[in-house]
Length: 425
Image 1 (cartoon, rainbow, N blue to C red):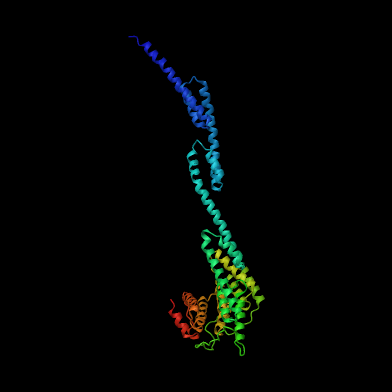
Image 2: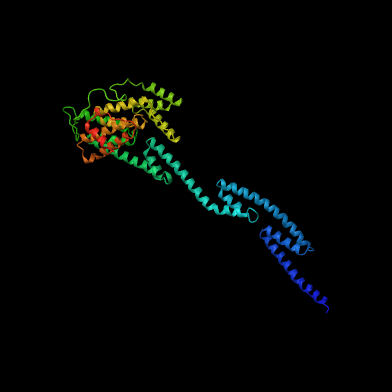
């Protein structure tokens, strides 16, 4: 049997199928090139050229597309590098544009990964930006509070969210407490209830000793008015008579080196110079002690108060602790001597100043601060509306007990005070 015509017929039948497949490859390659997918276009043209080595057009297109692939790969390298740089710098719009233009090549998967991360990164950046703005707003509020611009402080603190929100609310509460206490002091002063006014101003001073309208000055003024109004022939409205402590301390000299009946007169200007000098030398303990010494003689001295405030702020920023030198004992001595003279509001103001100024005898200071408040509570008849004095006294006693090695001066205060101190836990 002659099989040659049959074999030749099979070959002739295969030619149209071969030609059709090559044409399909070329059409697909053209479509890929039109879509910008040069890598796929190169693969298809080269497949067509390999299928028919005599097709010079297919071979030429294969070579052209291979060169385009090489160029596109270089562009993708640059796009990816620029995209990563933009992403890391927070320029997410540029990063997105660069990664989206990577449609083929070895960087495609990584580019798609970055594109998936961009929405979350945008949100995180927005949150960080808002937090930064809130931090700046909080700092503005603190600065306004420190300079007694309560109106600006309230405006700044009221709009704060995020991690500073709780601290902002604390400041707002402080301002509210201060303004309410001071307003109550004004009301009682207008009613000529000078002792009550002094107590209210003392409450304001406990929030911010150097607050607006000088609460310490008002305390002193009210005490003077109360004293003058208690002289024979003068009667002040709503002013109860002064009550003598049934357990007065001995006349002998008080217990501590911090408590003396007299001190040399403070040369304010010279002490300020010494404080500034110590501060420049880095002796912060001595500097803050000297500033306290100035305030014991001139409670309104702005340079000393600002110096203490600035040093405490610097210490907090660097996580350091400052303890005032022994010079600060002038302030504590003044407060304790005022306690023994029954000038309780002034005593509490100066003892709080001592503690606020990082005085080293925190145990003794807290004890006498508590003793003063407890004495006021007892002398006032232990009324329900004075109960906060008892609560505050107990807090001060607890703080005194926290000081390692502190022993209360039991022989120099009322047994009632000693008993309450011992009972407080």
